[in-house]
Image 1 (cartoon, rainbow, N blue to C red):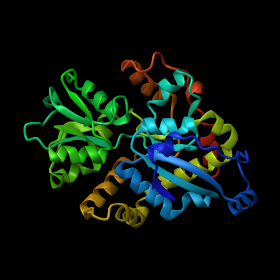
Image 2 (image 1 turned 30 degrees about the vertical axis):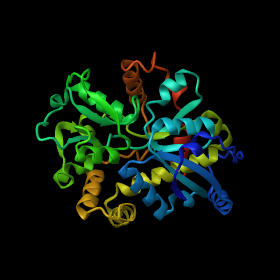
Image 3 (image 1 turned 180 degrees about the vertical axis):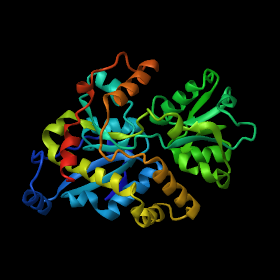
Image 4 (image 1 turned 120 degrees about the vertical axis):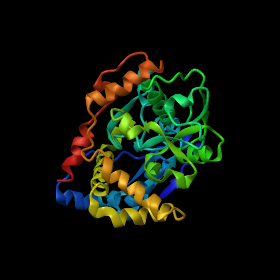
Length: 341
């Protein structure tokens, strides 16, 4: 079942039964587990590509193929996902930004990053103002963003700093998701903001134009856009279900980056965005096939996690860089990949 999680539901803890701890199943065991499916609550970010990926996952039944009964919830703010994991309202997030997890871990939160999702930031900066062409032109302007410290805010700040833009005079406004930001930019409510990078090739149809050097998929390749993460107690009590969930997402990532999945991808896009033009659908497909953004092997390197922490330290939201073993547990991803062989 796919639905949007309310703030009340997300912040209230929900207790769950412990699941069988089986790191790797033989084919007979897998069939037996499939006959006794277990529930999994997944909270992911609500960007346009994520919504399509969620629908594609639902239509292809990849989670069900691993013996799971999924409840996939869309959450606009990563801080709410963090709250949901800590309160046990959800079991895992597989496709959301996790930059805020590091300072939480530093403060004692038992969070573990499990795998990669979208490795490249699928966003770009757009504006509807004719006088704005470069990143420097944003000095003194109003920029749509998420909450301070959230994924879109951090990405925007990192990009502006890369090109030595003076951000002191920029007013950042919490507009919401990337889709909300695009609407605000087109309406002129804000001067600029980050939206789906796939729109670059036909931005004028949305009443906006891309800003030079604003494509984050090109400019911020080191920044891991999304990943899978949970809390330590879920690893202990629900390891088998989490492993199978990661396996399903690895299967999804491999599927969508194969050109043969085009028809299925378009069906999913049309189901989610019934009013979208075929140009929008084609642009999103072109983006995936061009950039291959998803972690088909689920891997997240030490260097990628260190880079994320270095940014946090530079933003003064984290005091020091934490060791890899304190912030991550990649053993579940290894087990998940074995299930695909």
